[in-house]
Length: 219
Ligand code: DC
Image (cartoon, rainbow, N blue to C red; front, side, top):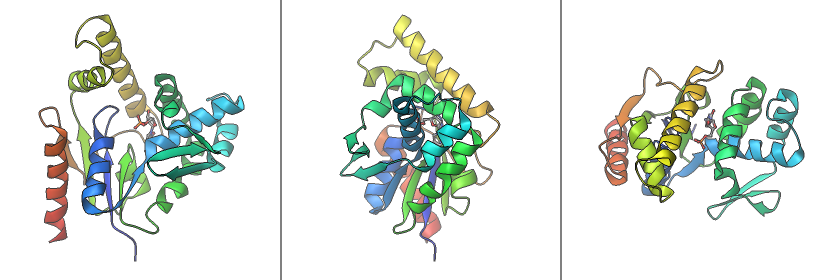
């Protein structure tokens, strides 16, 4: 029997990673940050001198990604890269390699394997539509671009107005457009997904909403 999966999709900086990992902790389930796999692929390509647009070569690297998740850290070969994959330019690289069908295909089974031994909470862009279409609960978690830019600025200790803030807002809108408009597995709300707009919710309230949704279908 397949393990149950909760799929949480949404745009960048929506807070879905924090919400998904806390939901997993509350339920005692495993957690998959699928965006990390695209970020790792971009970083690995950069390290190997492979251009992000070189589909066949990047897909080969994605297939063979020497990644290990352990104790809350991510290792590529044996180097800790949890911080390196969060760099803004690696995020842009991730967005580029994620638009390549062969790269998505190369990472598909690796993502499904996370549910092989444990129930799973998975977050990303296509968890509900492609990777786990049979998920027991599908959530589309979003917030306005303005609110997401404010959250990102707070994380970076930047003011909530001025040129740096406008740049963050611009980057978020550009990434949204790239993720929504690509030909393969674009970011979109699945027909059977519950919409959760967190513009006016804090993390605890968002986590509670997801858990409440799950308890309802579980009963
Ligand atoms: O969630 P994130 O910002 O770490 O994701 C990085 C990039 O990877 C993002 O621009 C879109 C892409 N991505 C994707 O295409 N499919 C996923 N399931 C997860 C992320």
